[in-house]
Image 1 (tube, helix red, strand yellow):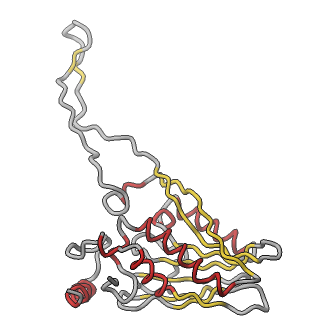
Image 2 (image 1 turned 90 degrees about the vertical axis):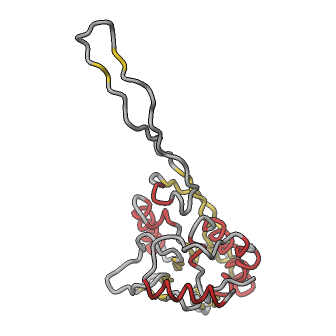
Image 3 (image 1 turned 30 degrees about the vertical axis):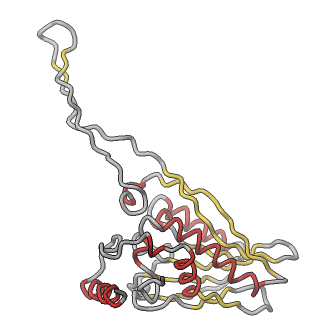
Length: 259
């Protein structure tokens, strides 16, 4: 069953996102490989990122757990003397936050002659869009630019700060950014809730031409292959942040049209 949305399905921004992230990376490689051979290859690079402040994702991306506990012990008195102060028990105990390791997959385009990294395709995760991960990610972006590597960033998450954010960036739910090696500009594809995901170029080494990547086709295929419709509850609101009243009305109309 296809998604009820013509573009990005906002319901996929919740607890299913890690699966969506990995599946989309694999699908991108599958779609690009026939267009790249024999001079280039697409490889999946999997790495771990520490999320030291996962509280904002609890109940959205990470499982919702009980974090509060009210102790029941009575006040205690140290020693037998009546002059010693009574220790006041705490009113609440909280677990020490645990660092979450996030598994992230990116697609790397390399030439087959020298295995040189030509382009990096990055699907942004929540940990890339808030501190301290945002600073680390922006530093990595700069290293890729300095190494003359093309960078395609696919941001299909509404929460967080976009690492390529600027004042002129349009206020849209989703955004794709391409920074070509040595270029002085970043190409932007702004994606509204009602718009299909674009077909974007994947730059290679000159004189080779760009190859096309159809993101909407990739997203539709993984939605079907993973049967996401069986896991999503469209009778509930989509994951935060909240939409505008106009967008909420549009979402409701889309869901009613599928019933």
